[in-house]
Length: 148
Length: 108
Image (spheres, rainbow over the protein chains, first blue to last red):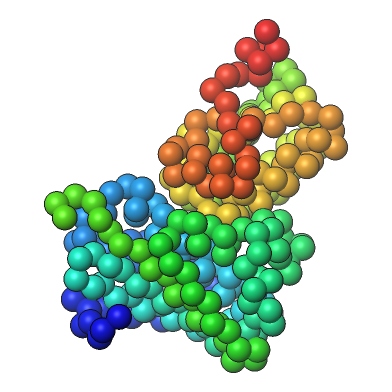
């Protein structure tokens, strides 16, 4: 795809406290309001962002606090790209981590469906990870509703 | 309190409210399990009427309570789920727990 300049751009940085899960999904949803998404599109994005941020808190920074970075770009035609980045422990086997029901956290009733939900509720999901350096999750969805 | 719990005969109803995520699920789990262990109900109804958002932490919450009720030879039902919540439930294969009936009506 040729280079495309985003029509709007937003960056967030916050600590990996579980109370920030609601803040993160609400902030992204609020930023996308001018695109006039319908209820389902907005719910899908809120859910996917919640899953990505929860992964940072539960897995990347399992025994510590660290920064979580969210970068959202809106492109012409309502294409939204959301990047959720951490500097945590990284994922040893990304392919395995993305399998439905796979989880490394047995103590907290994690369903192991986080990545599957991101994949299913968004148009695209990309995961890059390096052990000891962190993980970048990129979510993409086109808001195609009303007036377009 | 994000959950109000009431016991009526053999049914325990947990009325959940707000947003269910990893941050809120732990407290809900504790409250519900404590009430279940105390009253030993045959039916556990999770009423999602006041719930405005749920991610996969809610799936974990439902699956954990399903397991607990099975251990007690009881049943679990999910009532008043919104469109978004139904979508997440269906994704996890939990749609069989969605109901519009009360436990009494189920027995007829």
